[in-house]
Length: 176
Ligand SMILES: [Mg+2]
Image (cartoon, rainbow, N blue to C red; front, side, top):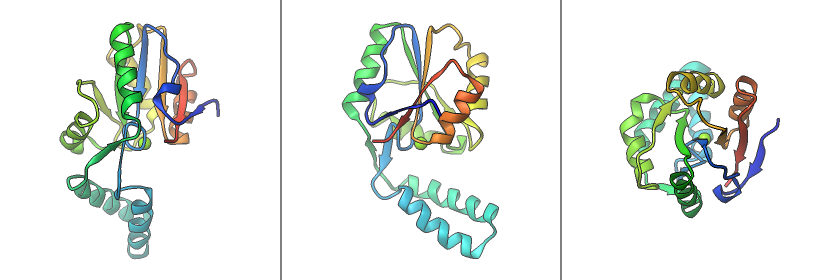
């Protein structure tokens, strides 16, 4: 793995004419109670009742419902807003790439808007490999013009799949 471990957005390299691809959950924002602990606790209960596929489906559905009851917390409010300001002054852009399903687009946009006050594109991987999806997005939406592309995510497998599909992208493993 070639990712660089970081703990805030100020540690991300700032270069002009760049595209920053940022994950949402546990990278841009997190929830106080709806976290990894919640997922493993609820997951365990469902795994005892259903087969793995069914349990995961039910777990995600439950998570989606809970999403409407929680308030997002920025992992690094000043860091992300510094990066946004840097981008606006240096010919650089930000897009978000989340594993979430497009079904939760509206609530996702709302939660993101509580952390940052500008609209950026949000792409929904819907649980598919982020590397493959990002490759498609870059070509489809013409993100090929940048000198550098940076990918920031809290999950190692996501960084690895991006490194595999897009070896020129610099990846950061974000642990707030
Ligand atoms: Mg994440």
